[in-house]
Length: 495
Ligand code: ADP
Image (tube, rainbow, N blue to C red; front, side):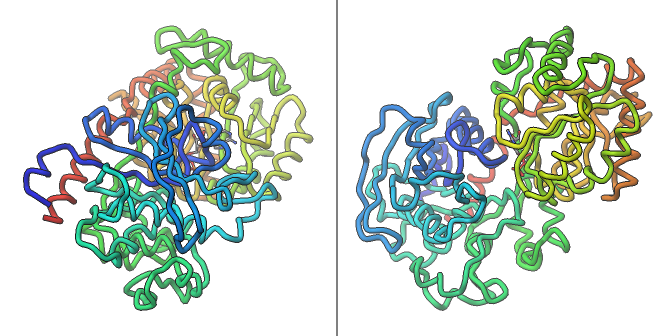
């Protein structure tokens, strides 16, 4: 790398298994859809590599065939297509390989919710093409200085680059969006992905006798990031290190927490096309209209005064929804309504359906994924509940603050970094934006929601909370600048 390459704005290949608005199962899609655009606004040449699932291929226009790869370890043939991301126009490279990606279901699971049996091969292909495009074996004229990998699905890119022949290779950054997903496969899988046997040990890709795609990234990447400063600390210890804490603590000098931003155009109550009426801090009448519309749509009693609590989430143990299910019957002793949108664990889903059947008009549960309804919920509810056991960053607590809907959150990960608990001091200095509970117990969650309901009944306190949250800047501007600074540091370390 020549010195003057550093003063120029970096070229970045961003590798991701999902990207909004084409394909989304969670927060990673939101980040992939907005961070590259924010980096491009700062002048970086960022392009995104993503698998060609049916929704991706159907959602793009003006495709152009760039190259056909033959005889890769994962497949005989894969076509590389270029297109633009709808909305922001970020340049995309799409891997068109029908044998691996042209399927119903979501990117990781079949329609019944079972992981695809060939996920190692599918995401090895994503990683392999990422590694090729990041080295001098690339058939393209675009030569990135940085390859930015996201979660286990692109975790082996740094390992493939490490063992690839040739000397011109991009430096790698590995971002952990959720350390609980580690891409663990049997040891024999190593052969299929073309990594040498010598990397199968503790100082490499081996993880308790198996092969972990994520560990490959954490071990071989030039730098590691995660999506909030607090989570960056938590994952260096038990229990949130999920077995990787030793490696992460060892690499703490190359581990940075950068809090996620949100897409402030998409999530803007003053211009949101999914709302029945838009609103802003100075004119909150629209919020009441959305509450009415939401109550009607979900079959809740149309009472404007009753506090309405909302949840939009993967319905899992991580999100603490088992605890909420325990607390909900007690909460419902008071005049409150609950609306939940989500999918996930079948037993928990059934638990919430049962709760709705037991409390008609007071509890509404929609099992499914519905982007439009998620916006209406953020706008229409009074309080947002996010009792996650752990939360690398979390996005909904930021959306809800922006929508004048104070969140109730557990003090963990990015929730601690982005929500300021109400107390006399934070109310006085106008920093309070929500309600935070310390211990992951039913008693603490219940007490915190009751504290929030008491504040809701105090009009001045509530307005102040809403104003503070709506005024906060959750845009990508600062975090994208932090990533850019990090890319420059990584590039200079490579020189
Ligand atoms: P995670 O990525 O762990 O699921 P995040 O809070 O980081 O959690 O991001 C979740 C994203 O997915 C948010 O944009 C949220 O609104 C959205 N989401 C989750 N479940 C649903 C659903 N059932 N319908 C619509 N959007 C959903």
